[in-house]
Image (tube, rainbow, N blue to C red):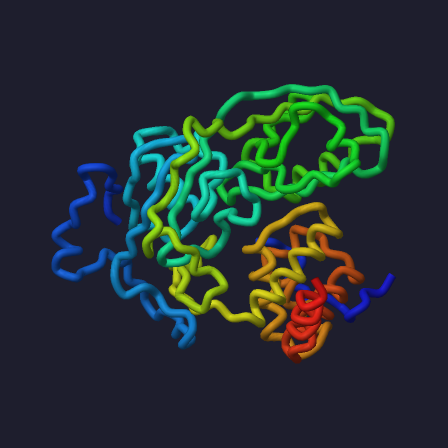
Length: 343
């Protein structure tokens, strides 16, 4: 059957700084005193846009363990995996103990998940592995009612449970639980779309064993960042954010309302199509689409990128292009504004 947007490009056939500080370690380093920064220089770097520039000095972030701990200070990371390692080093724990992080709240709040961007004043809370749970689930309907996301470092977990769904009726399973095993098969290291695919492929009417690990419960309720500037969220406020990338250096950016609305729409499409939620993936899709002039160029751009592994259908490509095109023209932003005004 011919592809909706024409023949693929043949090349798309193949897929191809410093120690942490905590507690009394919060004293600035000599490099920081001198205003220096430990940055690995690259030959022939790409010229950043005015809204996307590598940080000129070492950025410092405050963190805590969500269930309760002293405040730590971390710096010198350029992606999510390095950030998790910095937090682990800060508290002398194994990085595998960290399930996910939230920004500016110790609660399991999926709207505050740490993704591909951190406000320069955001306070980071690390949610640590807690109680493992194992339940038998009968798939009485085609869909289980789960939305899966991952931490970018090997753990997929439940971001949303649809009310009245199969999983909503299963005791003990909750939002924030890491999906560790299905029928004894380890899912550690799997991406969210791989876990969602395995759950989708379970035949209707069959019973399977699901093992999850919940985040450690908070030992006290008054934990949190100070009421001053530290910890105040800057995402979507027009202030600068640190954009973390899976490859390449982190960059400081100024949030763009058009980009935010477009990535939210793309994320909603990902949830409907694949049962996953991934802001960084949505931003990557937007970046490819923003450079394309038509749906064919967008389809080719997706096919020639790492996104090929997701196996997006032509219909889904077209739906995503519709969101991107609407965002470029300002129609999507207007729709979002009209919707917000109604409620």
